[in-house]
Length: 584
Image (cartoon, rainbow, N blue to C red; front, side):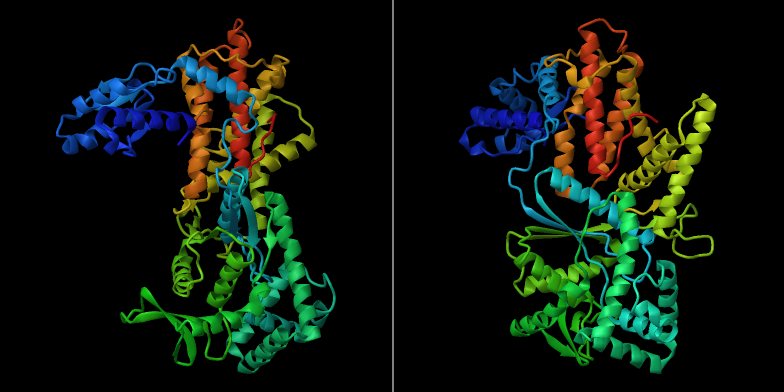
């Protein structure tokens, strides 16, 4: 709820008490944004909900509320419509005052969280010895945007990269490399990441078909867990090699993360099992130690267990996730823990969350949130793959986006007969290409699948990053053409006269509400929708209102609207992890 809506809600609550008595204190006035601008800006629907309780017609109830309602500083006189809706239209003078206030505010009127918390966002989480692929795109981009928004709101955010850096795959890989490429286990940079992935695949094939090799690999795991010097050294080299490749992608995407892989929690796993045993939750089932869950059954309808220690004494993802959860609560002192993973892992999170709650490990003031997301699909509507059917490497996908942006820009410059330096072209292509990929992903409701299309995401029209970057660049073009320094525009300069000015002003003042909703619901597409709508409202204003040619004081007022729009776009896009360009 934005500041204006909050003020109106308070006034309506007071009017309810004044009209009907103290029993109505705390009744929700059901204040919502008006669906149609001709009815005003806000609508209170409480009269309809009170009709039965008060034994009166809703219009009569609405009339009694309006009689006691004082919103004269904010709104025109309230109007009653239909069966009893109370319509409220904001005063132009109020809007002008609000815009003049936020003009001097670096946060553009968005208040920080009233009660900042320690929050953890667990995202990206690639596996060592494997390349990041398109499947890591959504977790990385969505998680980063959520972290940025929480940080902007003043929360103490720990961005964790829970990489897969432990387990059977390392025994398998090390055992294989001892045979075919022993230098990779003793010398840094002996392999590049592509070769490492190729060796991993061959090791997996061998593990699946060769029982003697399986045993050798398991012995390497035992050596790793026991801290054998040569195996540990080999493991560190493999991790470092993957880490360097991940960092190239993180730098390209401007992502900051603190790595804390599965290996970090390895010393804590036995304690998890012991504590579950003490709580009486563990049941032995076919040699494995499990916790039986409520609401989960197998195909035969029997209760489904969550295994926390396998029959061979080994641990699994659930054990590590339980250990990490306890650490994040007890040591990191997190109050909200957010896991950004694909929707297919929904059951896993529901299961280990349930075990942790049953064990009494989740304090009442700690919130656990799984943020699920859908698949990235190709233009054929199937899971996004290369032509050969392989998973798309994330590095290739990003390079291709920049290449497409480069070609589009060159074509546009040729049509416009513009000359630009190669340095300018490369920088614009990089920003536009990466931004297009990010925005195409974030603008979808994250729970849905979406079709990946370079042509659509790079379109200068429609709900795309290039469209909004172009609006931002257009505003800076106005400042260059008029030799305007936006920072030197006077305060108290906004005067709203044209209908497109009013529409833009009202929308600029909704930023706080949008950011607050994303902070709570963790749906970045809401911020994308807001920025797209803002860009459209600016273009309507730009098309219908002269700016540099306008007479004073209208000229300065319209320049302030330009500046506020640009700053809002820049702030909003930065919360999505998107850079802006002053020239395109």
